[in-house]
Length: 344
Image 1 (cartoon, rainbow, N blue to C red):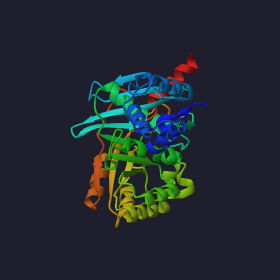
Image 2 (image 1 turned 90 degrees about the horizontal axis):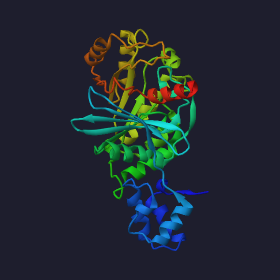
Image 3 (image 1 turned 180 degrees about the vertical axis):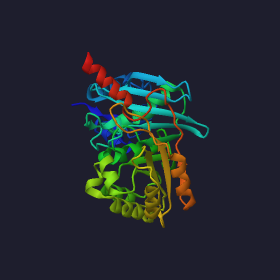
Image 4 (image 1 turned 90 degrees about the vertical axis):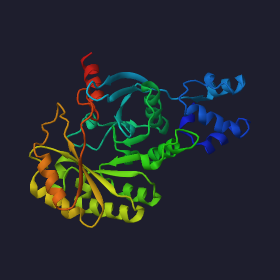
């Protein structure tokens, strides 16, 4: 079985090369090559031919290919559907802002969380991604687009904290000064609210931004939208978020997709305020992107909901819709490919 070198950190890579009888500096050399996006050992020109041959026999380099690419004519957003070495596909979205370029990456092939309004969960979870496959989404989006990446959001297909060990290794790799060197304060991690994992994450005191996909402040509504809530409940989730802030000092962002007639009532805005009182937080209202298989429609009350929160002292933003003409919402492009394969 071949070894996935790109999922290793520098220390592991150095130890691996040591077992091959190579000096310690080889580990850092190869790490740098991999984090530049090389696709073969032959490209590592400062390694001996013998070492390159040995590495080719015992190791592999992940390198996704573009299955599909869509570029928005409205705002320049680019959506990639990457073809992985086992034939599966994942999505990545590049969003261009005045302050820099942000890439939204996936953490799993499919998702098992079952959120009713999300296309990512259709078909369930297939498998976890590896650290290398997560890193590749940043590397090859940057290479293919020609735009340098300054910010990362883990908000694509999959639940990051359902693949926590991989995500933590990815964060270590992408943060490395010998690699892309993207600082933790430029990284956001979105979760549907896995309480035990959030508590574990808090103990690491990482300087990333935690985003909680809330979408409703009451158990009845949230449990209908998000099955994970049935085992946790809103009260426990907000208590966990309070612990996270007390441990890390990092303000949490609450993602709230606005769904017409479902979670956009005044009483729900007032309940959300009561939950957030006393703990610094930020609410990000998201205009819903319609999914063909879903009965949910975008809310017509976003402005009223926002004003009601702001009048009671809550910091609120409304997310700008990007890539509306290119299926930029999570899972839409992968879903289309799955449907096409079924019809072939």
